[in-house]
Length: 114
Length: 113
Image 1 (cartoon, chains in turn cyan, yellow):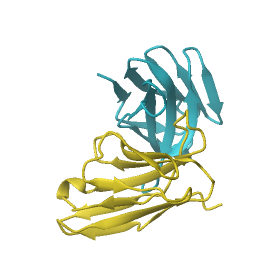
Image 2 (cartoon, rainbow over the protein chains, first blue to last red; image 1 turned 45 degrees about the vertical axis):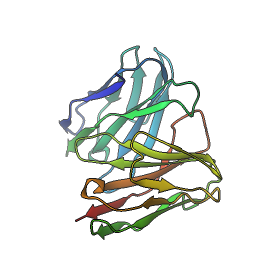
Image 3 (cartoon, rainbow over the protein chains, first blue to last red; image 1 turned 90 degrees about the vertical axis):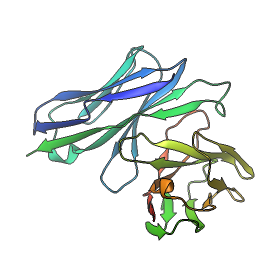
Image 4 (cartoon, rainbow over the protein chains, first blue to last red; image 1 turned 135 degrees about the vertical axis):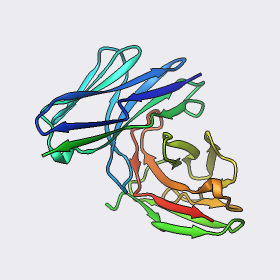
């Protein structure tokens, strides 16, 4: 069964304390893996797409990496404004885009303390 | 550009009532989707559309109807609301039909009593 698991569920860090969020996946075929940020009471905001193992993407203090079984979102020297829920989603291959499945993880709630 | 807009922001319904959640985008995106987000669960796809006049079912379509008469609008109809439909609903759009790099709306929080 296709599934996406994010860990930890919640993470509290001091400002400047770097860490990583994990997204592990089990799918029959991966077409793409997506990271989103969601602030309370708002819709998810797209961050990154990764397509193949070994790929990396960076944006400010965030770096996303991908292996054949999992993705990591590395946060370097975080600031309080990085506090949010980070969602991982996997596009699992179907017969075509209309048959592909999109599976979201439950998210990691990140809280950065000043 | 307003992006993706949704109305209403909050709604309370009684069991059995019907209503329409509105979604509009001004980015000329062909692809639009509806999701629901429940505590302790990931976002789940309800229905999606690959262009005006074309809609398809997602993972949890039962109890919901959609139509797409224009590129801009993609309303979601609850036919007979049930407490199990209490959730936060998000509309999303993308210009890339092969990807889920999506722009999400701000959401509608629906409570069914």
